[in-house]
Length: 215
Image 1 (cartoon, rainbow, N blue to C red):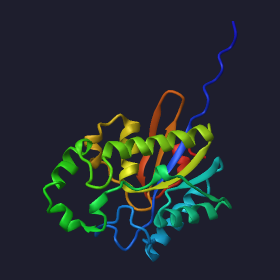
Image 2 (spheres, rainbow, N blue to C red; image 1 turned 90 degrees about the vertical axis):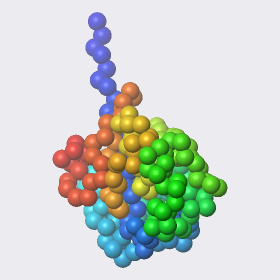
Image 3 (cartoon, helix red, strand yellow; image 1 turned 180 degrees about the vertical axis):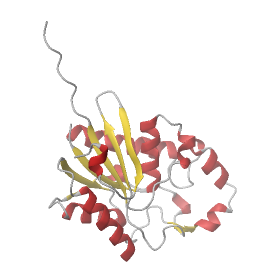
C-alpha cells in the first residue's frame, strides 16, 4: 500500500487595505483618480510593511491600480526589495454616480438602507453591483493564488472588496458583509487550500503574524 502524499500547503493571501487618505470617513471616493495616502496613511503603511517584512515566504505584492493602493503597496514591497504587480481585479467597488459623494449625503439617500441591509440586490447607477464586485475580487484572488501555490502574497485593495472576500471565505451571505470592519492599512489573512479557505485574521492592526502561523 502506497503512502498517501501529504496535503499541499495552503497559500496565504494578506489582504491589506490602503492607508488613510484625506477623504477616509468623509467622502465616497470610489474609483476617482488622484487620491493619495496622507502623511498618517504613509505612517500606517510603513507600520504594516514592517510587520509583513518578517514573513519569509512572501513572494509577491499585488495592488489595485488606484494611487492610494499603489502607494501603500510600494511601501510594503520596498521593505522586501520587491516590485508591485498591478491587478485590476483588486479595484475599488465602482460606485458610478456616487463617486465623490459626501458620506453624510449618502446616508440621507433612500438607497442607503438597501445598501446596508440588502447589498446583494443593489447596483450603483453607472457603476457595478455588489455581487459583481465580489465575483471580481474573489476571481482575482483565485488567479494570484494559482500562481503562488504554498506561498504567502500581499494584495492591496479597498474596504468593500476585502470585506466581500472575507464573507466569501467564511461562507457568509453577501447581505451580511457590512458587519465586517476593515480599517485603513489593516491586514486580513486568508489561507487557501485545494478544498477550503480559512480566515486566519481580519482587520489586524498590530502584532506578529508568526503567531498566526504566517512565516
